[in-house]
Length: 203
Image 1 (tube, rainbow, N blue to C red):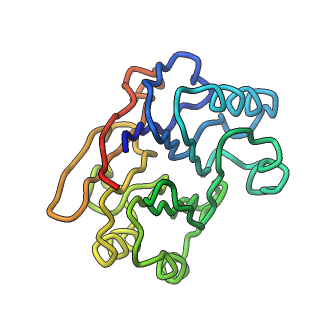
Image 2: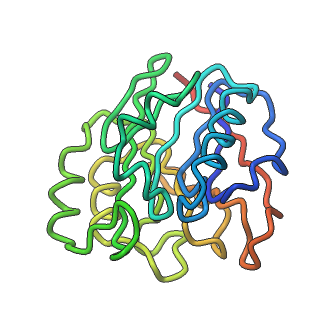
């Protein structure tokens, strides 16, 4: 399965070239503080047209309108699946995504580490791809990663953990059990200077 990873496009999706792939994953922050529903709809239309057989996305601290009414935004989706603390199996590969970060004051923020720990304990044990917006502590996180998420990843050992949020930490880091990818497209200056990350996972 050819997978394309992106995150943190912040309404600049039109400047990004998505290569043909089996699965396109967006790890959140596809809006700009959710200020314009018209711009959010434009992103969803763009997503539906990309050259991928399957498309999965989650949300995070900028997607306030989705936090307020997830069902409304699910109805606006076409040719894509929105995952909010839930999973889907695609061509034999189990994918689970969360919009939750420790960021207090942002959409889907959960400041309590104990609550995040409880949430992440519900991730299926057979997950292949873990999607979050924020990084786990100590891995491509710029010092801003989540300790509870790190413990969950160590326990679960997914083949891939993809995320974004920290624009300065774009890149990948392979380990014995898991490939970690920070797919933030926007750089530290807010320019879409990074390319989507393409990789292959066997079924």
